[in-house]
Image 1 (spheres, rainbow, N blue to C red):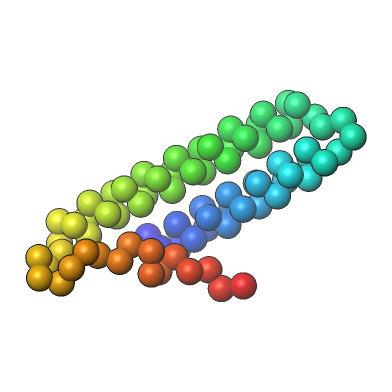
Image 2: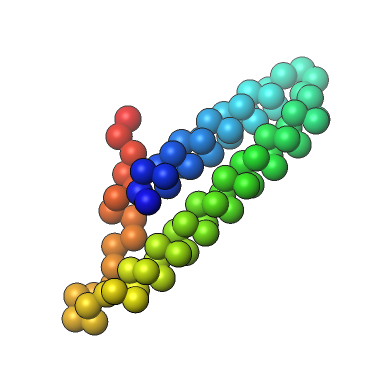
Length: 79
């Protein structure tokens, strides 16, 4: 769903901020960085699977005369 995808995008952003913060420390914790990077990768994998399954569903239901589906119109996150 769009709500789930938005939550994954937000999680990915927050994880990246934590990674950036840790990298700015004088002595970054390599174990923490490894854990955060694995978590970020898992979130990105979930986003990819969700987008891929959503794209397939849209393509299966698409009207051939309407042009390509707009997969990203609902992904805009308000600030």
